[in-house]
Image 1 (cartoon, rainbow, N blue to C red):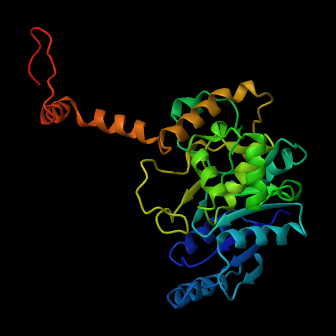
Image 2 (image 1 turned 60 degrees about the vertical axis):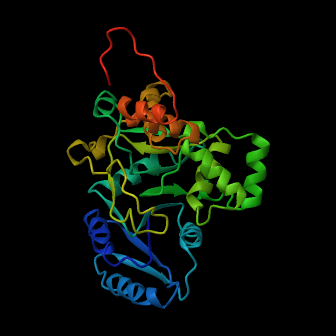
Image 3 (image 1 turned 90 degrees about the vertical axis):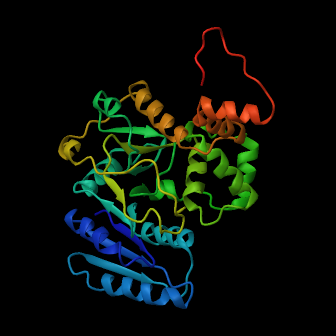
Length: 324
C-alpha cells in the first residue's frame, strides 16, 4: 500500500476536481492535512474546504485538521514526516493539483523500481511542455533530472530523512560546496541566493532541490505529463502573472502502465535533459543587461532610430539602403 497525502488550505473551488482525479485513480489510502485559517477572512473558506473533505466516502482517510495556520512548508514537512513514520514511501498532492488517470499506478511503479537507488530522491508525474519532436524520438517513459518538482510527487523514507531544512545549515553547505545550480536550470541560482539571504519564505521545495544538487541526486520525471495545476494564480506562491506556457495532460500519449520502459544509461537521457534545461532557461529571470538587450531588440529598427535621434545620434545608412 502506498498512501497519498493531500495538503489543503482555503481553495474550495479547486478541491472537488483534485478529489475527483484521486478517486478515478483508485488510491488505497488518503491522508488529509488541512491547514488552519490565517485570519477571520479565511475562516469561511477553510470551513468550506473541510465540509468537502468530510464528505469523502470512497477511500479510507486519516484527517489532520490544524486549528491555527502553520503555513504550507510546515504543513508539508510535518505531514510527510507523520506518514513516513508508518510507511516507507508516500505520494503527495496539493489541493489544486489534478492528476490524470494512471498517475497513481505510474508513481507506484517508479517508487518500486528505484526504491534502493541512492541517486534517486523521488518521482514526479509532471513534465514541462517540451517540443513534441523531443518526446517523440525518446524511446523511454521516464528520465532523470536534478530538480525537485512539487506538483504531484513521491519519495521514500530513506530520501526524506536525509533532507536538511535548516536555513543556516544548508547555507553553510552551499558556500562550502560552491554549489553549481545550472544543471537544475538558471532560475535556481536566484532562488538559492534568496534562500541564503532569508528573503525566501515557505520554500520547502527549494530546500529539496538544493539538497538534491548538493548530493548529486535526481528526480524521476515522466516522458508525458500527467499533472495539471488549477490554482496557478491564487496559491501561496502564485505570482498572479499569466504564464507563457500551459500544462496539460498528454492523455493520448500515456505509457502502458504495465510495461513502463526505463532507461539504462545516462547517455540515453541526454537529449531530454538538454531540452528540459533549455525550457527552464528560456523562462528564467535573466540578468538586467540581458533584459535590456532583449527589450531593445523587441522595439524594432524604427523605434531604435527614434531613440538615437532623440539623443542627437545619427546612424549612417549604406548606399542605396531604403529608409527605415
